[in-house]
Amino acid sequence: MKEPITKYKYLFGPVPSRRLGLSLGVDLVPKKVCSLDCVYCEVKKTDKKTIKQAEWVPAASVITELGIWLESGVETEYITFSGYGEPTLNNKIKDIIDYLKKRTATPLALLTNSTLFSDPKVRERLLDLDVVLPSLDAANQKIFRLVNRPVPSLDIKEIIEGLVRFRKEYPGKIWLEILLVDGLNDQENHLEELARAIDRIKPDQVQLNTVARPGSEEWAKKACLEVLDKAVGIIGKSGTDVKAIADFRPGNADGNAKNRHAKTTSNTDRQALAERVLEIVSRRPETVENLAASLSEDREEIAAVVAGLVKEEKIVEVLEHGKRFVKHA
Ligand code: SF4
Image 1 (tube, helix red, strand yellow):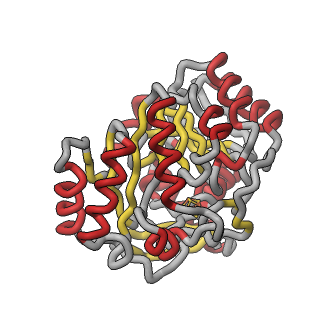
Image 2 (cartoon, helix red, strand yellow):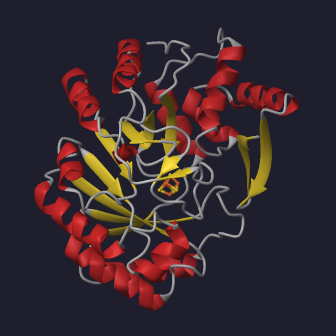
Image 3 (cartoon, protein in one colour):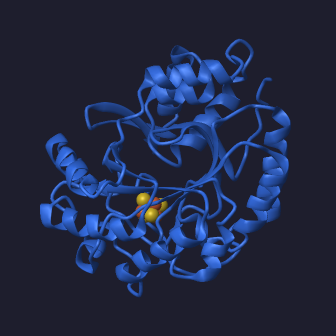
């Protein structure tokens, strides 16, 4: 079924994700509210660094948009709470999870920075999700401050304890992500420390990642492949399932898109397409190939839309990590 060209405020994509395949994103906080200000953040620097739980965006409005989306009949592999900041800061997340569980069999995922997991109320709201992807880039306070630049009251030991408790309470899958930044958290002794924390958390899988897109700080660089291999060995030595996550391949993205979406190229209004490109790149930088896969469009069509937006100075193209990315101006 053809996707309606609707301008959503709280939904974006579906976007190709390195970990979840093709996923519809749901934003539960405004740009950019987060408890951290990670050096590699693909959104931008955090404007409002907070641990305040509130209805940061109205749950009723998110549910209205999800209703329109679900009516369109477009399939995605996941519906994922992610986007502009930390989704668990929205204290109405459970209302939205409950609504989706009644309306669709599409698995629900959450990308979270784990910082609120020491709060039992937060953990309880998340129990009906199918997959939780918490991140943990640091095992001690010094590295936590260097990489994630948290709200000062956040304590990494309490966060790790929250994850240990969540594992005991939550029946779904936990895929824990560690993002390694060259020279910041990829030292061998720190990897050993992370391995000890992970042995206690017992996630179903650990996904090792590194910087892959232009981020908050230009100086934050990707860890080298040898370090990623070493990290796989250290974290996996006690039997934990560890995977180094490769970049999303445009070829795979095309495959996903062709299987799951009707083509919309022939009569798509270019203005509407430009708005959808802006929606995606305002959340994170993307390549033209990934945008094409995400929007089920020909690469040439997207390239033309991107060229128009560059001319209007709404977006810019940058070359980073050996790839050309499109990002919000
Ligand atoms: S990467 Fe995630 S957790 Fe870190 S600052 Fe950005 S939105 Fe927040």
